[in-house]
Structures are given as structure tokens and as C-alpha cells.
Image 1 (cartoon, rainbow, N blue to C red):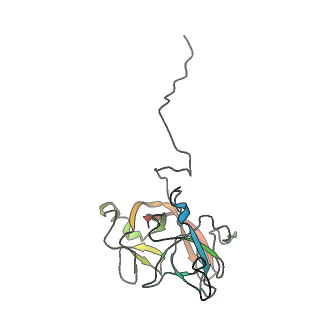
Image 2 (spheres, one colour; image 1 turned 90 degrees about the vertical axis):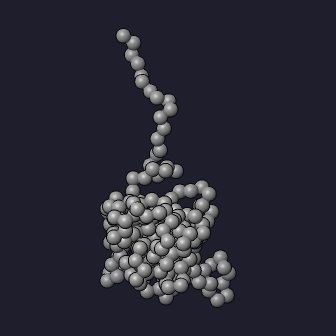
Image 3 (cartoon, rainbow, N blue to C red; image 1 turned 180 degrees about the horizontal axis):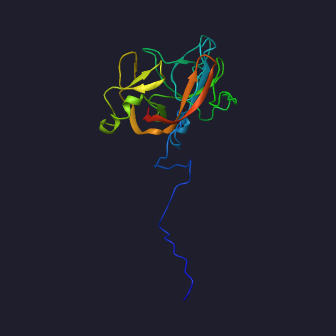
Length: 203
């Protein structure tokens, strides 16, 4: 009998974190690798008067500061009628994390990286748990998606929410197998929540 090594030269697989199309889960605010969209990544200064820090996966609005060029906007939390994109963790090495606050945070005055609507970037964003049961029946471009500025998640509920552009599409979702952010306004710490609910938005 001759020793054999059975192989299939056609079988392929993807390394973790590579440009794969299959998913094991999401991390809120960590935009997916895309060689075509990476040049759309931009940033601005978190408003020095912001009442809270910012992390990846937050709805944002860019404001042009007096006397500053358009390449250096002031970033604020999204508000009604003011919504230009989402913040991301990608390449934002200035964010701070500590043993008490494991999620990297940008404090007022610090740099916040972001993708604007129209960039076609794919960003996992925390979603309303009530969406999880409804997503399998939704079209990839629902007629109405909203950003809840209180709970900091995407929702199908208009009450208190800020409408996302109708061009935003749902790329995928992951109910109960993602890392989401929980922020405690009392102590200013943010922690990762395992088994959270994320929706992948193509903005």
C-alpha cells in the first residue's frame, strides 16, 4: 500500500478579518474592509462643547467651523434635520480606552473618523432589538429607517427618531452574535456587550 495525501486544490477559504463575504458576527462601528471605499474615510473634531464622548457607530452631523476649511469640520451627534453619516473606529488611533472603559472613546475636542452618506461604506450599527424579528421580511432598502438618538440605535420606529436617507440599504444583520456598545452616562464609561444586535448598513 502506498501512502497518500488527499487534497482538493479547488477548495478555498478566507482568513479571519480579510475581505470575506461571509460573516461570523459584527463589531459596532467597525466599517468593513473595502478597497474601493477606504478613500471615503474622513474625520473631524468632536465639538469641544459636546455633552458626551463619541464612539464608532454613532449618527453624526458635520458643521463647518467659522474660519476653518471644509476639510476640518466640527462633528456633533446627529439631530433632527442634521444627519450626515456615521462615526467609525477605523484608523482612529487617537481614541482612548482604559480598563474601566474598554470601548475606545473620543472626548470633546478629539478626532472622530467617519463615513458620509453616499460613500457606500458598510458599517455595522446597533439596532433596536424589535427589528430582529422583522428583518427577514424587509427589503434591503426599506422605505423608512430611523436613528434613535436616545438609545443610539437604528430602528423602524419614527417616534423620536431621525430619518435616514432612503438610499441607505441593509447589507446584512446579526441578531445576538455581535459586539455592541453600552455607554454609562453616570461614570462616562463605555463597555462592549457580547451577543448584541447589529445591522450592517450600506450608507
